[in-house]
Image 1 (cartoon, rainbow, N blue to C red):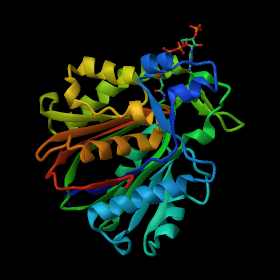
Image 2: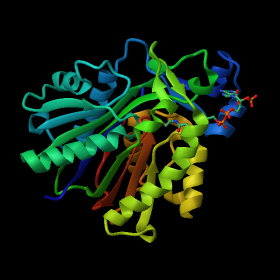
Image 3: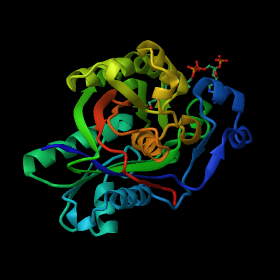
Image 4: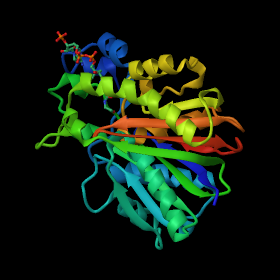
Length: 319
Ligand code: UT7
């Protein structure tokens, strides 16, 4: 089975909060945030907007882009770290969209979650003979922000991205690698009162080492090399982490998709949001080799090598 992406969609909440807005709220500065992270603004959902609301909107757009009806969906898998543990956000999306025959559940692998969910969906399609799966990364990071902790409060944003997987894809999945190291769990976790706690420097060091490693490994598993790489879509956690990966891999700037300036870190939504943006802006072209790669709490990491078969895919974003 040649399984891959047949549609993509994304959603960002309307409420855009700039660094200048945050300067008025806490002891920080636009200059510090931009130079240390590359972030200029983030979208933060209003209080009454849920992770499932954002996931549903992204999923609708992905279905539209794939030209697939909800009745054709066999599985819905949502990666999220910010939704209530139950019912699964995927089940809420199922109810919202009326996906009667789909099996629906969430996966939890923080910022790497989308790639874990994509691999799970692909495996289910192969083992159970499912034809179409909806894979979503959706987060309301704002709900976990401790507004008294400037070292984390400025870093995150909300949003959702989704893809439909099916046969005869627009983007074939040539490899997926996943990994975890639970001994690093202490560096990034949710506190008992439900707030993000992070040892930024440790996560930074891990990310700078891991990102180039998994890009190379995902290419190797796909039978390709760095010379074949046309576009890298990295997890958007910090511009400096992306720059370090570019330097280690000797990649030109035009090969790397960067959305952190507008999205900040949206955890599991970060990669599908960036991929959707790359599609929308025409960055991905027929015949190209694309690598998506992420890392996050757990610690976890994942990367996937895709071949873009044709550029006719459309992406419905914030219409
Ligand atoms: O999605 C995966 C998870 N997350 C990540 O990948 C994040 C990885 N880590 C990072 O991106 C960086 O470590 C941070 C952006 C979190 C922090 O950057 P840093 O260069 O490591 O800064 P730092 O934590 O060493 O702090 C430097 C200074 C400190 O002041 P002193 O002690 O030098 O006086 C902080 O108190 O910057 C101060 N600081 C701030 N100043 C203004 C920390 N946060 C802020 C802030 N505004 N928001």
